[in-house]
Image 1 (cartoon, rainbow over the protein chains, first blue to last red):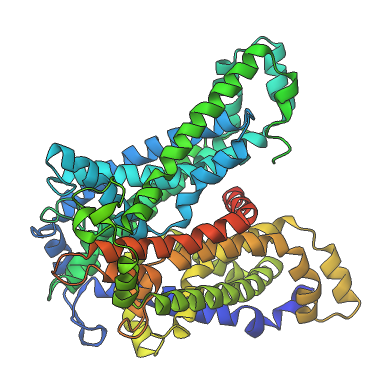
Image 2 (tube, rainbow over the protein chains, first blue to last red):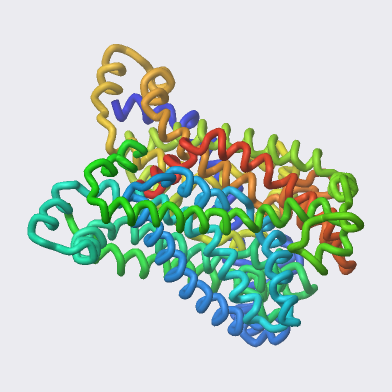
Length: 282
Length: 290
């Protein structure tokens, strides 16, 4: 069978692979190469070694290191908050009381609304509330930080809730019943039986929230656009600004992008390894 | 799953029933608060723009009421219905092409085992983690050179950039599904293409739905990729139209913005309410595959 299918590769694999090369592979490789070059367009690149990387880290107007810290802090806090909220709601909803279906529908809904729309929507609301205290989202970078945190929790907690609900429902009833017969309290059942069984879901959810936090762009652009003076700029927006906000900085932008890429891939791998080792066999 | 939710109600103790009732009340309050931001936007879309930032939580009464002017401005400034059309065309075409091409590719790489198919699989996984900023500059240049800066051309880009997730989802399913039916069909003389379309494709139906939903959610809401790839003077998608209202340096017409936000959100919510069963199960399936 394998040999018969093999001959058909131009039909089965080629279309996807051509598009994959255009949409990912070629841009990725040429992007990697360009990060070591001086260029304004793709065709006039000259090799300059690590100059771009030095320039990227010494950029003061869109401070890369500052953005990195801001993004890492955001990603860390949002991962904990979103997963805590999502899990809490999931644990309560699987109890099964009147209206659970409706509540689930409501909590998931913001996920379908795009980041740009969400950013503008919350800008009006948050600025409306902050106006009572004489400040706005861009008074300093921390208003933008917590504003963005509220937006992301509002949007993503429902998504994680869905994953946790399906994880909780996959736990065999025998396990929780056995725990109940052995006299375990609801809290003990949750922490000793359900949470260990839920580790695969926790792996996925933390993976999604950590990478979403690091890659965040649309909400950041629409909510504060990095203001005041690029201090609420997360990494993705910082790179975008370096590329398109200034002339002569494309090389440094590409170098930042490579560092960003290494960072996200590295964090994703470490995170998967960390939580995978805690998963239990059923 | 709805069978599970709510089935335990009748064997609860009195204390359990009271707890459940309290939970219903608490969650009702939270749900209302959850929807409240959307209601505020809806209210503000009927408010004269000068009052939107001054009194965002007030009802649009008397001199604050703007009737439909915000909507008229919003549609005129963003060319909203054009944007809606292009968003729709791009999303539908891209999802269709992605589902067809990547499911065929995934079947091939999970049935043929050699170093090439293994490499394709690993590359697909890798592409899912790489952030868009890594490729955005070179991708938009490549798209320009190849003339892919139209709503039809961008489908190729979406196929390339969305292939990772889709191939991953499809091959995740195929690895666990038995190969024997396909084998017996091919022994009976069915050639690979027919085997795929008459045997594999029907089995894959649930995976088509869940993958399609995940890809559609991404493409419909995507801002930066179409903004950089498309010739945006001629083609705007909905997120581009919303962000476009901000313009260059001038202040934003908040009235038009509110109306545009409402027009951007309403179709999504309608779609969600009609197909939420598939959306929720699509998200669940996507998570399990990980």
